[in-house]
Amino acid sequence: EIKDGYLYGRGAIDDKGMGVAELVVLLQLKRANLPLARDVILLLEADEEAGGKFGIEFLVENHLDKIKAEFVLNEGGRIITDPNNSKNVRFIGVQNTEKVPYNVRLVATGTSGHASVPLKDNCIFALSKALEKISAWQPPVKLNPTTKAFFKGLAKDEKFPKSFFLKNLDTPLIGKFCSGLVAKSDPILNSTMRNSISPTLLNGGIRSNVIPSQAEVTLNVRLLPDENIKDFVQELQKVIGEDPRVKIVYDSSPHPHTPASPTDNELFQAMEEVGKKLSPEAVTVPLMSTGATDASHLRAKGIPTYGILPFPLDDNDLGRMHGQDERLHLDDLEYGIKYMYEVVSWVCKAN
Image (tube, rainbow, N blue to C red; front, top):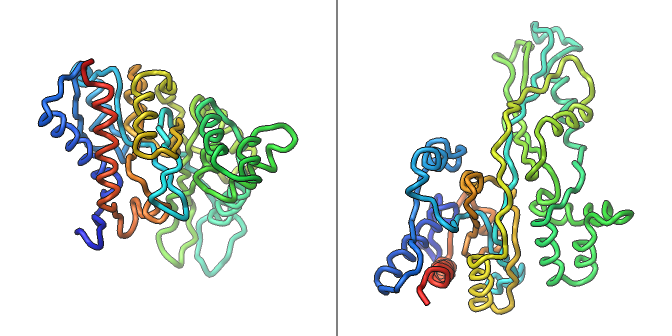
């Protein structure tokens, strides 16, 4: 539905808007009959929200020869606007790496019985105590080359004292103070600095008058690149303590190694130049997305992959993603199409 200049609908931002922009770019290139120095391949596939097993994972394992390219443009980054003026683009964050998702379960056991006779070893109490400890835990700040460059870019446009905090997130003596203030101010920046945990699923009990013998919670864990899930679980065990009633269950299979895509090539340069052209005040910075995308499967095959959501979105509209009244302003859709066309034609047109 189009209303008051906005396109409303599930996927308007994530990720049908991006798909439409890429399709329009391909049509524009064809209609302009632009001489191309490189092939341009449009790939639209499903299952990204569930890990990509029946989408990108299937394609890279069975049909890599059809999609292998010198560069890939994908979703995953974002255009950051001025909080007081959504038309003023401040930063263009290009995703060149991402956090790695794992699901970890806490399984608590206890004695089952009639709810009219309370029991001290109630498994729900044991599980809630473990969750309370996890809630109070803040994993340490760990910056990598991408996040260092990202925070450095943010600091350039901020005034003191926020610029000072952003520059000193991991500085000895004051880093903990600075990162604490930044973490409180922005949950996305908080997740960008460290490994993270979000409880997402609870399961326990079969009737309201029966004390269950087992209860469990699923923790959605997002690890920084190059972090090890086994090491993380060991730290998590220290946090919840050695309670014999609570076990940590997880899949220890390693995820494919996906090194960060470089920022010293033609595609990244094109994104920098087009960003300056469309938004002269904006700075293009590499970005590590807190969420997972199909890009990890392509990077694992050695294909430099870059994520960008090319629409200037304010925090209000960005927060509607996966939620109620997801929407995309038609002006922002137009900006995104123009950005993508300029980038692709810059990289692909023949001299």
